[in-house]
Each structure stands twice: as C-alpha cells, then as structure tokens.
Amino acid sequence: MKRFAGWICLLLAAMMLTGCGKKQDGEETKASPVSLTALQYEIDNIAMDFSSMAFFRRIEEQTGVHVDFNEVKDSVWNSSVDLAFSRGKMPDLILRGSLDVEEYGVTRHLLVPLDEYMDKGLLPNYTRRMDEAGLREQMTASDGHIYSLGFLISQGVNTNGHFFINKTWLDNLGLEVPKTVEELTETLTKFRSSDPNGNGQRDEIPMEFTFDDNITGIYNLFSFFGLPLNEDYVYVDEAGKIRFAPEEDAFFETLEWLHTLYRGGLLDIDFISQGSSIWAEKVNEGNTGMFSYWRLGNTALTPAAAGAYQVMVPVAAEGRKACLPRHMDIIEFGAALTTDNRDIEASLRWLDAQFETENMLVSQNGPVGDTLKKREDGRYEVAYVPPENELYQSVPVICGQFFAPAEYYSSVYVPAEHRLEKAAYCALYEEAGVLEKTSWKLLTTVAPKTTDEAAETRRLKARLKSLTDGAIVSAVTQGITPEGREEFLRRLREGGSEDYIRVYQQIYDRWRGGK
Image (tube, rainbow, N blue to C red; front, side, top):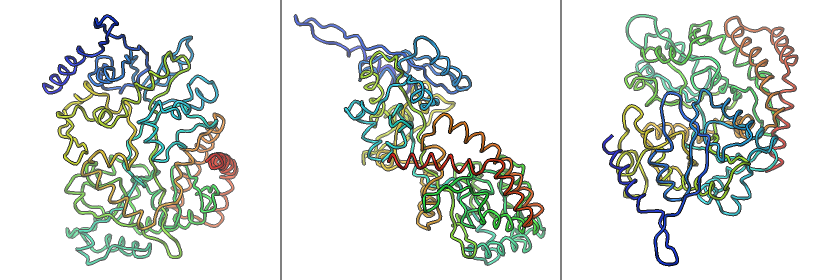
C-alpha cells in the first residue's frame, strides 16, 4: 500500500501544477474542467470510490473533464439503469455493467448514436483499434447505428473446452493417443479393465464430464460426430443455413455411442447432476482417464493432477470430421452517452483518453513502476499483484474501460504463462481444422436482435432445452429406439424448433445483408 500512497501523492502534486492558463495581462488563472455525471457499475463485494480514485484524477488532468460518479452495485444494476432512464433527467454517461442498446438506443432513442462522432475522429484510440480488428459490425445495432463503446480483453481464444487424456495411463499401458472414436473407445475400455493406476483395483474412471456446457460438459463429445452442439443448439452450416443440432443424424449417433460408454462403465454417470466443483474434486483425485476443460494451468486442478495429462485433438467417427463449437471474442458493454448528455465532445475525449495504451493497461493492472512495468521491447507486463483486492482502490480494473483486440493486445502486453498455454491449445485446434467455420456466438450474441426477437428466442430456447436435455439423459442411460427418436423429433417441432430456426435465420440474414 505504501507504493500506492506514494504514487497518489505524486499525482496530486502534479495536479496542483496543472489547469493554469494565461490572462491577456499575463496573470495566471486556473481553468475550470467540464463537469459530467455518470452511472458507474461496481462489483458487489468490493467498496470502490471512483471520484477519489488516482486513475480518474489522472484522466481528469489529461482531458480537463471531471466526472461525478454514482456507483451502483452489480446486484441492483439493472433496476438502477431502468430507474435512471425513467427519471426526468438522465446521467451524462452509463459506464460498464450491461445495457440493452436495442431497447434504450434503437427503440426508445435515449442513447446518443456514436458512429458519426467516430467518423469525425473524436474517438481516435478506440475507433482505430475497433476498425483494424474488423469489429465495427459487432458493435452495430439493428438500425445501423453504434450506441455504445465496447469492453474487450481479447486472448484469441477459439474454443471453450479442450480434450485432455491421461498420458501417464497411456504410457503405463503402452498405448498411443487415440485418433478415432473407435480407438478412443478401445483406450477407455483398457483404462477401465487394465489397472493403469497400478493399485490392483478396478477403480479408474475412464471419462469424467459434467452435463450441458462446452467447457467440462458432454456437449463437447458431440463434436466427435461432426456436430458442434452448443448451449443454444443452433449453428450455421456451410451454405449459410441455420441448423438445429438436436434434429441432426449426428446427434442421435452420438447418443448411441454415449449409451455404449455408459453400459460399459466408461462414462461417469454422475455427469447428469454434478457441477464443476465436484467434477474438479474427482479429477484432482488423480483417477480419471479423460475430460475436457478450459486449460490445465491456473485452474481448479492441482498441479499434481494436471501434470498427468496432455492435450488431445478431437477424435472423429468413421465418415465424419470432428467439429467443435467455435468461440469468439464477445464484446461486453463499456460505455454509452444518454441523450441528456451536456457535452458530447468532452465525454468522448474523457473516454478515449482511457483507451490510450498505457492508461488502459494501468486501469487494469495499476501504475507503471509499481504493479506494472514496461519492458525494453516496449511491451508491458505485471510486476506485482497487490493482495486482498487493494488494486481496486487505485484503479477501476474490470469496472473501467478497456478495448484490446487480440493482435493489438499481444503487441503491447505480455500475457501470463497460463494464457500462453491456452493460446497454444487454440492454435493446435485451429491447425487441425476441428472448429466450426462460423461461430454460433455470431448468431446468439453478435448479430443484433430486435426486442421481440430476443424475447422469442429466449422463450423457445427454454422450452427446447428442457426437451433436449431430458432426451439426452434418457438416451444415454436407457438407449433410444427408432420410435423414440421420432417421438422426440415430434415433440421438438411442437415445442417450436421450426420457429427457433426461422427467427435465427431471419437474424442472420439481416446481419449478413448489412455487412
């Protein structure tokens, strides 16, 4: 904390020397900064005082713009935003948290369109970075305007879960890493029957998974049969058509294989109900043959457990090509200007100063020379991490503004070792060609939805998810007959699968037509 206090004192001293101008008679006078108000998002369990924060004093010094913050905790953020827009006078700025730009921008016209100001060069740091990364489309609302600035810490991640297999067990049994579904099934069978842990007991768990996600869940296993099953069930095929994964042949082929694994004791049946915490406890016991996860290092896994595994390229069923859901950088809400804003140019100047490279990295990591250092190659890296969330007293961290696409971020910042680990796995999967061409996130998150479309897709997804997850559990544990398959497909149609496809096709076609 002494280093923080010293940095703040130096900053305050510098501020006392700024803001001075010259009268015509040569007498100095202090210029008054522009004053704005902001609704500022704040983390629930950390007390933050943005108005007295050293970082924002530095930005005020640089821009001549003072902001009075109304801090709002995460737990009451949405209700506070609704209240702010329903009052007679709105704040000048909305900062971080989340904001429905379709509702408040497109429908109610309560947000300032920013694209014309970007084109005039009033947000140079932000706009250049956004355009060079080709991310303008992701920020464009359904009416063609941009109503917000994004928050992005890009790590170039292309898929959520990677597969890991127990290399120690493979070596103990003299086995190679499997490359097909058939080889994987044989390997898992040997994990179960050949005592790879050498304790004389049949206590090995060949496959350890959770249920309905793409990190530790069995949804990833459908990729072995060429189906990029994701948590929204829709994907884009090579012809640009929207497909509903639970209606595909590959969906049922995967269920038949999973039932075979279940009958053979190769898949831990607890996948149905266990969460990620219980899953991690089991993997950390060191008795698991295979799983999928974000990465090995700096996760819920112990170093001892993680050391037994190596990454594995997804296997493929005969006649199929493996296809995992493709993850993409999703831009979160960063900032917006309300139509009651008293000085748009000053607001944009204040925001854009925070996107200057060093300012931005300081906002996340703390001051240069203390928690952050600049290397000889010009890039920055973390030198020290203050304990017990002390960093939040000096800089806003994730509550501030940040926009760093992958290529730019890697050019100015040295990522931690565990980030490099994930990047290597992603590069391996990209080279292997095992990811879908068009990310489903483009459909569900990037392509803008009208208010009605958003409500309809949420409603249909909830109904279809209940039907799909129930069918997965039944098929894995009991098997599925041709009659059962047809009954399930009928229930999906009655549940609105055709409408679900139609709405997403409409969303995708409109987005693609506007490119």
